[in-house]
Amino acid sequence: MIVILNLYSIQFSFSINKLQLLNIVLIRNVFSQEIIINAFTFNQYKDLCKILFDSGKSTSVDLEYNTTEILDYVKINLQRMNRVEKTFKMNPTLQEKLSLLNKKQLWIVLAESWCGDVAQNIPAINMIANSTTNIELKILLRDENEVIMNKYLTNGSKSIPKLISLNPITFKENWNWGPRPKPAQELVVSMKSKGEDFHIGVHKWYADDKSNTIQDEILKLISNN
Image (tube, rainbow, N blue to C red; front, side, top):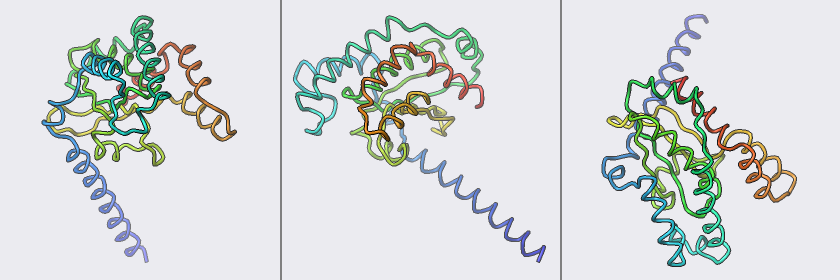
């Protein structure tokens, strides 16, 4: 019986390793040099959001995300991005940790102009990435990159922003983050469970937090990888 159990243990361990290998292969396969080359820098993304908004459009071609109500959100999100950029203050501990990075990282963010969480977080992500020469930030539109988005679902949903840290050569994943800082996500889940409109509550949370929690969470991810 002991031998049988040991054999099962070996077989089980081997299966896990194969699954891990398959996961790595799948993640690598969804990224390519062509995708990265055609991705946006933060400033290009901001300009695209503004140009499309001035034309009465969001970054998504889906009519659902181009209604008058959605375009009102886009207008507010443009203002939010500008505000976060102006008020962002770098966490000194995170800054020090980033200065010690000895390997290049490629950060990919899945985003869309209509998403309030993107507007609240992507300027902070950009400023964190810009604080070191070892991180390159690229932005992909969620709806134009469905294969990638489907690899990074949150409880089955295409929630954004989604930040993915990769090896820039092999595209092996270091870690991923999103779509919100943990306390904000918990607040949204709690308010949804009560049938409450979470939008005002979560954006008040962002205003009070001032991008501090996202910095703490990214610091932890960098430190553990």
